[in-house]
Amino acid sequence: MKTEAGVLYLCATPIGNLEDMTYRAVRILKEADLIAAEDTRNSIRLLNHFDIHTPMTSYHEYNKIEKGHLLVKKLLEGSHIALITDAGTPGISDPGEELVRMCQEAGVLVTSVPGACACVTALSMSGMPTRRFCFEAFLPMDKKERREVLQGLTEETRTIVLYEAPHRLKKTLQELLEALGDRQISILRELTKRYESVFRTTLAEALRYYEVQDPRGEYVLVIEGRSRAELEEKRQKSFLKMSVKEHVELYEGQGMDRKAAMKQAAKDRGISKREIYQALLSGEEG
Image: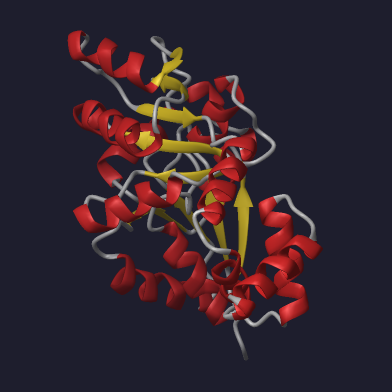
């Protein structure tokens, strides 16, 4: 007789304040056959607080593949497993995303027990535009990859959300200032905890502040995106450095026919299609 597969529950846990634990999360953690925790030594305090006695196993960045296969096997055999991270929502900037992928490939049902998430909490308190945002979590440690990510953010028009540890905060603020220029930033610290704070400032002012104040606690940085008007102005200036012929050939090289390329070049330069045609004709005659 075929055993019905179990369910993987992604259980959000508090990011600082234990009162943010949901009733449903407590119930699921009690009813599950097994809890997979990022750090069992850290999670045991949470489980003890809510009188949860479900067996635990470790699941973290360094065993996510090997342990992931074992967990999927248990799920396929009918076990219900709750996945928790040290704080916040599993699968968001942690190895839980790998387990979710493995479960989906194996046909195992995955569901979320929502709750605290530092990214959304910080964004909602930041005073920055929230309709459009990009989440980069922690910047990569690899220098080349880090430079590439920062370079990509220079053209980003959405609000940018980053995580950072206190001992790297000043370096990250310096790199952001160099890459993005001086922008508005909200620096949120110790979310939901006793010393929670929101510091609305600019990147340059923040850097000056932390030169004399030691960073303490966990940080979320919410940075304004580049204005569309500024980006469009930069784009137009770059086009004006080209000749009309080069401009039209740029779009032809991207697969446009001559008519469409001329129309787009005219739009970029803020002139009529007839002027583009005359400039091309003059160049050919010259």
